[in-house]
Length: 316
Image (cartoon, rainbow, N blue to C red; front, side, top):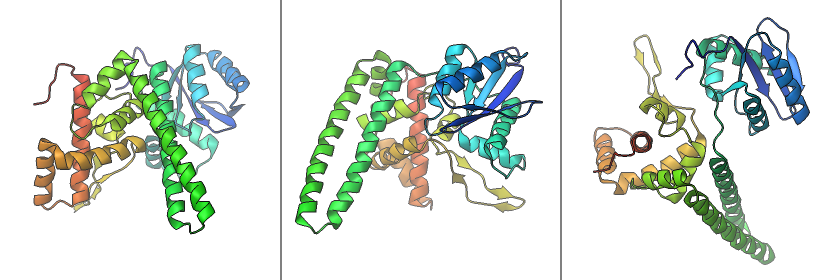
């Protein structure tokens, strides 16, 4: 969805974000640079508000370094859009821009805004932000746990093994604590509680998958079928040229969502009656199992989006 002509701002500003700096590109002007600090952000906002035309800032995710800027722009009343990095890279290639510097990236972001007019960013609720923080911490603990299990499997020293086992016990305890905190966070918010319950109506979707989707894909329930598949990274893209018809591929999307959808699809392809039949039919038709499983993932995210979009819809 794009902004309408009446709503569309009259100028676009590209901002490339790094840990220490903000590179800014405005039409008809030379590059500007600000520090990625509270003071630098305030200085940039002041400059943007002084522009003769109302700006819309275009930026892309930068490993969390964009959060303070997004929140400050929103609080100041300036419109800002957060665009998936994959879309920006594809746009740059289409424009023939192969070089990459911070200022070039800022310029590409500005030009993307001018042509595509992306939707403005809206901050998630405080409750959903806390859920996202809890889910992220659980994933970090799980990653540390997996690495420590691998170290334990390779260790032959008794003392080292004892230390690893002790750490694994503590990590398991912390993961259980995070599960309890995540459950409490969802139960304490009527919207999240209702959405989580709706998602778990689908066989294959458990509490971990539901909480991850709610945290990482807050747009779910407001998307079209194609948008849901694209954001989850399971939408197929053609690779055709002339008379050649290449194999369709999936790419982009939100990695964490795709990861939990994969595990959910494995379960659904075995125990969900409808999706099991769908998976079996694809494999019987000669589709590789991995392709069939990806199709189940796409069916899942489309179904979950429909469930949240239509509260009266019930599963047969």
